[in-house]
Image 1 (cartoon, one colour):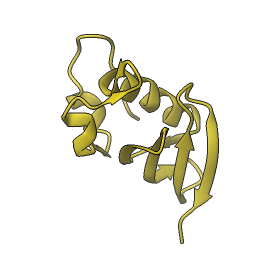
Image 2: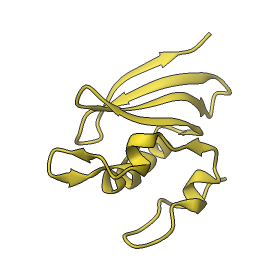
Image 3: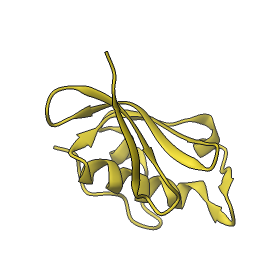
Image 4: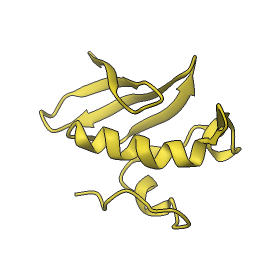
Length: 95
């Protein structure tokens, strides 16, 4: 079981230890609007866990947060897509 999402000022290492891989855009401090992506990462991790999923590659692309190859509670792998309010837009099963 993964630890709860990181809080402001805490290390991301615990979250990444759950199998999430950091996209270079997240590591480089890219922004989503006026908000740092690192803040978005914490919220994205919580949204992914709320879907019963973990692991995967986190990305911000075309105005949406994406998690590629997320492992979910049903034992299957999915690509997840969230809007900037962290509402699930798409959950597509990977073959």
